[in-house]
Image 1: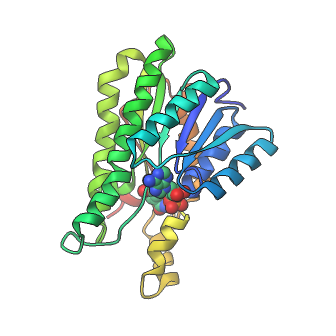
Image 2: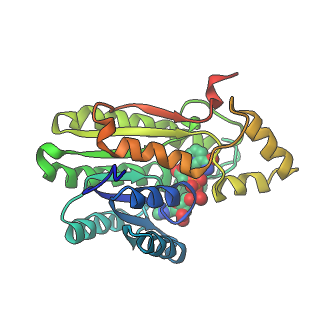
Image 3: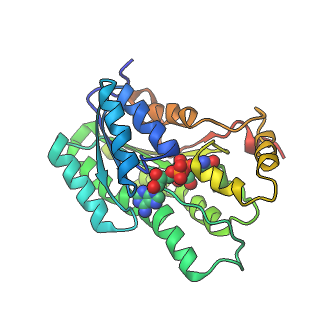
Length: 257
Ligand SMILES: NC(=O)c1ccc[n+]([C@@H]2O[C@H](COP(=O)([O-])OP(=O)(O)OC[C@H]3O[C@@H](n4cnc5c(N)ncnc54)[C@H](O)[C@@H]3O)[C@@H](O)[C@H]2O)c1
């Protein structure tokens, strides 16, 4: 195995859900992994478990809404491991509101994490990868099926996610000649705490879960590890000619009407 041997990777939002699964998968595949999150306790516990299983991972506190935190995260990673090969911009939040129901503060908070945060993470990650010469690097942006189709009462979330697959394409255009690749993963409903928060506010949470599963061709929600497997592919050399793509990891959610 060891598909990511000798690679230095940062995963934002590594303390829960999809990010946690990516940190664990990267650890199992031999990457030196930095998990970055605002949730220190869970973040530290997960990297401790990765190390106990023979992996090499550290936790660093980082609020992606603060550019100074992002700069420190990347500088500390390069100081510790000598380089940066892979950046997964995964941290995200969700606000369940229509356009007219969304306040300016709610919009700014969501954008500061999901879109502005991802943008500046990628900017500073690419700056570090430019130091790698021909080896380049791989950026993975966590979009959503909602980068491509909309769902009711998620106006700011859909707006942010729609921009992320274009962010990946823009990076692919500008830095392909330096062997820096960028791709967007677009998950369907994945069983994580973020999804739980959405179901809990529905009138019948269990019925809403069943309904969500049934929206996918595969008739179920996805597991975080199923997204993490795709992140391993995009981070590693098996995807050496894949850039600017949106990889649907959605169980066929947007394949059907
Ligand atoms: N779960 C789904 O169904 C689903 C579907 C499509 C896309 N996504 C996307 O996948 C990503 C991960 O979602 P998840 O379901 O694992 O959510 P989650 O809530 O389980 O995990 C998100 C993590 O991001 C962290 N985070 C939040 N704000 C942060 C900030 N400012 N700086 C650093 N870290 C921060 C949280 O502390 C948490 O650990 C998100 O971008 C989400 O939009 C999720």
